[in-house]
Amino acid sequence: MKSLNTILHLKSFFYFFVFIGEVFTATTLLNIFLFSTSVQTTFDVIKNYLASYTIYQLIVLVTFRFWDASRIDAKTLIKNTADELQIAAEFKQNISDEAIKFLNEETSLKNDVAWTKNDKSILEELLKKAQNYNEDKEQVDINEFRHRMKQISRAMDFEMKIYSFSWMNSIILRKIK
Image (cartoon, rainbow, N blue to C red; front, top):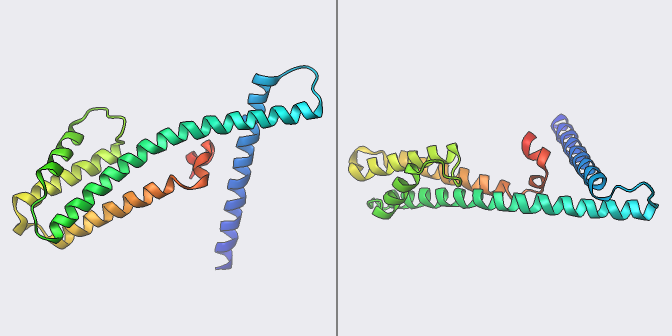
């Protein structure tokens, strides 16, 4: 157990230094491109670094917020649909025509920005399972159906929570984690 804690601390330090390195590099590059002059006082250097850091954080924040919001919207729709299918199965009700229509429309869209390939495959699975369920409830194992819907819902919930982690504000950490 002690070695696991040591590994976790080392990883945390590594990620911290990666983040600091990213911020320092980006800030320095912005400082060079935006504020490079031949003679600067110490106060000017600090002021320019703070301005560069602010600009960098604004760019990262705005870009990631828009991207993350679209990803969270997609995950929320999948989670909501899986929950709806699970509730229908729990009470042995037919899955609503609106849910089937939604899944049909979303799986037939080509190159939709909101859905990743993984999202599309989950939507296709939901559509197939919903159609099979409505066609013949007696042949569908309700517990297995509900279990799969809960798994999808839980996975979407977990993926949505990841977007709130502070390391998501780092370009490099997004790539390596």
